Amino acid sequence: MCKSPEHTLIGRSEGERQATLKIDRTMLQNGIDRNTVMKMTGLTEDDRRRSATNRG
Image 1: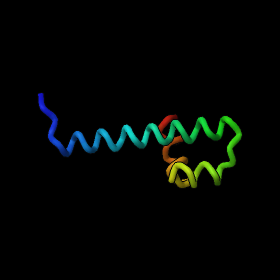
Image 2: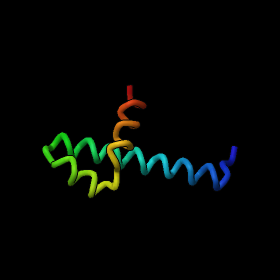
Image 3: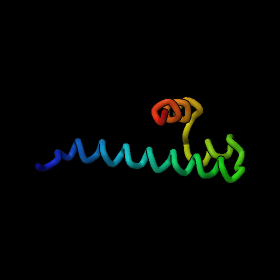
């Protein structure tokens, strides 16, 4: 089965998002200030809340 270019881009985008969220969590666990983390990752509080909700 061959994925369309559209599906490949969606998958890649989701993978990048997951990697960014993981970096976000690691930075926070290592004591980096939340505002600094948001500035460096480009994530918003809303992004973080949605991620936490999806993780359960």
